[in-house]
Amino acid sequence: MNEQGQIIDLSELLRPFKGKWVAISGDKSQVLCTAFTIEEVLKESEKYKGLEPIILRVPDEHTAHLL
Image (cartoon, rainbow, N blue to C red; front, side, top):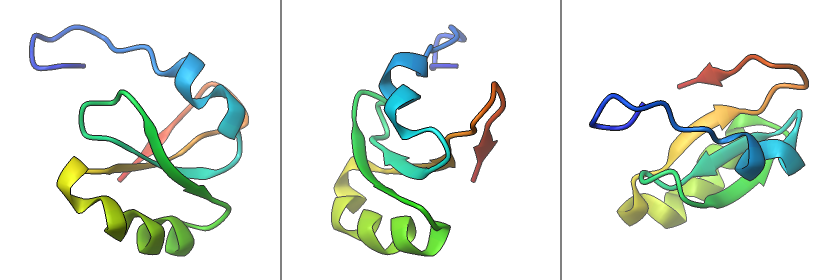
């Protein structure tokens, strides 16, 4: 949800990254980096601290894991 309480659909943005860990920008407009492990995406996302990255794993199915 955004600040106004509206649901944000990230399915189109994240579809190419099924089964991977991703860092998306804090405004949820772009994928900053991807990796197969959380350790790799955390390390890579350090380059984007100014964009307030959000780390999550894109599931193979219709569920999500947010950190």
